Length: 495
Image (cartoon, rainbow, N blue to C red; front, side, top):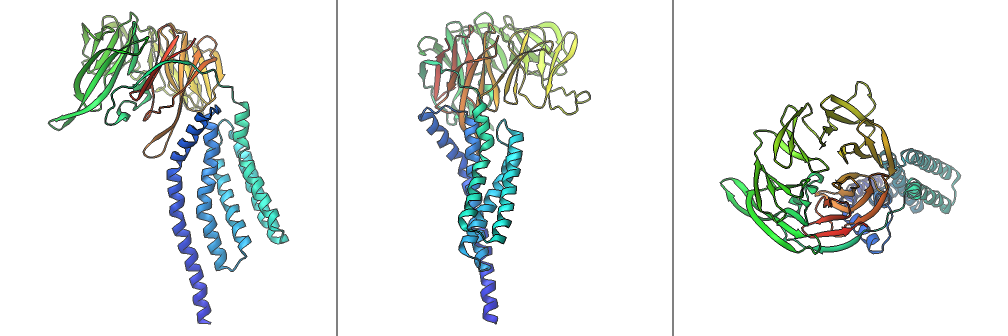
């Protein structure tokens, strides 16, 4: 009798140990899954299978979650079944059913892209099938093949929301023609050069017949306790990508110089102060040192900058770097034009308590709500009269009175504004996905849109992925697009 009790306790102790031990490889598998996602995306690109990356990743995430859960639950339920002296067939069926049931819960919580309602319905349906199947097959003592047929059907059903999203997604516009590519000197950590979408639009610009580039070229010796870096400016020939001029200077580590293109074909270097540069990087002798606050926005036409003077903002003339008389009440602009600034930092909850995204225009007459909704990206001026709002799988173009001019559905999910041509003819949107710890980019695509119609006209798939975000800039006439990172900077023809 005592021997049987010890055997029974030993079985349960073994079941507990297996449950704990198998949890670790399941967690490790989930931690490594972004690397598998990246391999998948590169494989699809190599095979030239151009389907929406977000949908592919959603399907792969479902499979990854199911496999991770199965790694943990199937051995655990098998061990518990061993402790209960259940048949091997029953142990496997319970393990797979529970893994699939938790995967359905994952789908319910996360949702497939663009198909929130369908995701909820499918997840609930799969859960009911599994629960009903477990009870029905247990009481009826059905054949194992029937039980596994229900599991297989449930697994297939989980993919339905993503397949629906795939079937209704718009077709990809034609690929832009690459003109040239160059490799810039590599930094010790290229993540400093591609750290954010904000920086990405301020490290490469078109100036006259040149392309100007600013980047962290190498670490430098400390100055006291301050880490330093060597920053480099390059002036490239637009036609060939050849380096025609170069400058180097020391600066605080992490304080990468920013570049802005002016209306008259010059560049503005921001590194503490603002300095006007010729396309060949020579100094025009015009500068501006903010007494406080920061300068970080340039109007699409290159005529006006926004100086955040806290409180409010002051407009600057880009040709002379002198403050203009007009002072605006908004202190945190996301974009500037000759007339005013935009922000997503003003919340109109009093009028629209259920919304989370607001676009506010501040001009000489005060603040005006242009857009409100469930989600959206940072609003940006396309011209003095038009504004882009990207979000909820859509790109919207509205006017400065809040009227919707154009709306188009995107192929991918998360959209980031990536630049507009000086004439307002075209604008660019970046679609990418970053996962893992440390973050790892899985794909990086750019789509060029026609401002008048909001229709996509060209796509660029970045194959040499940056650490975070690729640099981007449209030429003044909208006919060329510069994109990439120090590892691979490319110029594309959009016509």
